[in-house]
Image (tube, rainbow, N blue to C red):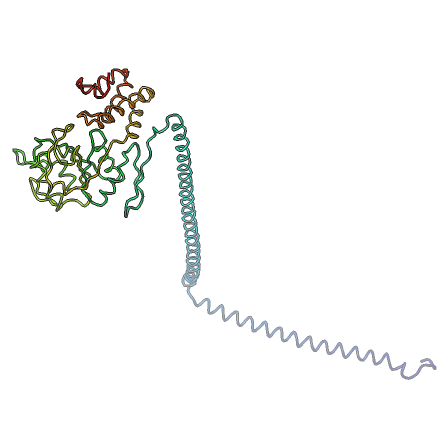
Amino acid sequence: MDGNSSPYETERPVQEKTRSEIVRIAYEVAKQQIDRRDREIEELAEKAAAKATRGLLSVPHRTIQKMVEIETTAWTDEQERQIARVQDEHESRIAREREEHEELLERTRRDYFAEIEETRAELVEKLAVLVRAEIESQLPGLLPEPVQVLLPEAPRPINIEGAAHRTLPELLLALRAHCHVLLVGPAGTGKSMLAKQAAEGLGLSFHALSLGPTTPMSKVFGYYDAHGNYHGTPFRRAFEDGGVMLLDELDNGHPGLLGELNQALALRVCAFADKMVTAHPDFHLVATANTFGTGGDQRYVGRQTLDAATLDRFTMIEVPIDTKLERRLAHAHAPSKPSEVKQLLKEVQRLRGIAERKHLPVVFSPRASIDGAKLLEAGATLEQVMAWRVFRGLSDSHRNALGAK
């Protein structure tokens, strides 16, 4: 030992060696404790495994397989149900979307065609105005004026196409009021056509019968043949099923026949050959006459005097000559002869005025103008038309009175 070393410096290595030895011994003891604990854990694990193995081996192999199959099947069924549910929801959603798309497409299609139809109607209306204006500029006053009638309780106005007499609205109004109408006017004024146009305007069927002194009751009320079969008539069909019935030339019919009609007109019940029939709500009767039922005159010598009871069943509407309608119809029948038709109309209307002023028993009806126009269009000369259709059968005295050559 160095003489200069202190006792503390000599003791330090000894202390450090002693500490290291103590740490080594403690480590060995701790490691032994840990190893023993690990062995105990391993033994416990082996015992648990052996016990579990003994319990598993006590279960038959088929049972274990069945348990696996059950678990697998249960999982598979649940999976399939989930897949089916998802698929159903998907298909339902697609069906709803398809239905919504189809509804949208149909709505779009309807709106599209409605817009097209509205546009087309507007174009047609504008085109009609332009065409009418052009024709009117070439042939002034010859186009038929459309007739529009607004009746009480009617949902919409009644539009009559084509040429119509100016009294048509009055006839429609009277028929709408369920009145039987007697149209009175000179020959050729269009009384029968008025009845037909009224039926068209009301949307009803049209029936007609011309009366004469020898018209039998069977033509009105029907009859049984030799085999016992009943035969109906136009009057029966209109009376029972509805429609406009025209009795043309009422003042030329037999008074006895007309008297039989009184009950049907007043009570709307009629005794036909087979049975009693009640009138249909849409039965309307229109009669025509050249006189007011007062009998014959210089022009219509064969007319009958109508009984006051029969006349009382009717609402009377006078139908004068409509010169505008006469002019339109004449020109319509001879579109290639406008100047000749104009001359014909002027002469016929001039002769008509003279005959009325002088009370001559001659008739120059609109039929003379219309039939004359047809002859002109067919190639006849104006002189031929005047001879064949206007002056036919006139005596020299009447010709002189009329100032005709």
